[in-house]
Amino acid sequence: MPEHASQPFYMPSGNEIAVFEQCHANQLAVMLKGPTGCGKTRFVEHMAWRLGRPLVTVSCHDDLTASDLVGRFLIHHDHMAWQDGPLASAARQGAICYLDEVIEARQDTVVVLHSLTDHRRTLSLEKTGELIHADPGFQLVVSYNPGYQRMLKDMKPSTRQRFVALDFEFPPTDREIAIVLREGGTDTATAHALVTLAHKLRGLHDRGLVEVPSTRLLVATAKLIAGGIPLRQACYVGLVAPLSDDVSLAGAMRDLVDLTFV
Image (cartoon, rainbow, N blue to C red; front, side, top):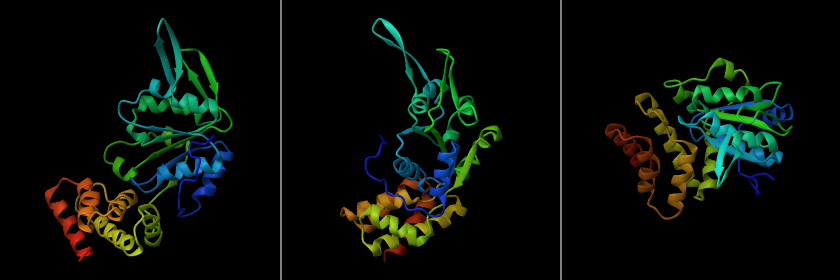
């Protein structure tokens, strides 16, 4: 059974659903590229529901090891027993395994994915000697933010070329308004104003704002407003404060908030 019993809301911006469905049908791994909070994770949740597949999600980080993904022996009272990691478990049960921000994982950890992303579709458990042949329904999906990662890390070509890549961006204005309206539970005028504000704030990227406001932040801010928090305060805590601690940048963002909600 899929992880989500009800359909996760996702508003497509192009042909990404059809491409993903073909990738799943042809057992191809998928890479989702795009800025933080633009809908990559929601898209995977929607596709898992649409395809009727279980979804196993792993948030990658610097300390993630191959054993964390594959599995390890654990001590149970007076004996040791093998426990599959999320990658091995997904391969066995034919789940979609989603590695969020895969670039954060160490390169020696990412290498373990290679045999699952080509014609072999196998995973070797070196500690047990078992070779797992992935269930036909298994699919590997990874995501990362190329704009942010370009300054810090990058993925090896030998890994990148094992994936079909889908590019994600923030939705066009009308679609983003519709998302904020539905997900944020606010009125049309407020949703429109928040998206307008987001476009202005995103313009500060050239002034040193590393991460610009995402659709996710807009939805969170809309929920605060819908719950009775005053407009400006909701924008300060929901949009401005999470983005930067720089005094001048925060001041510039506050000015834009005040100009938007006169």
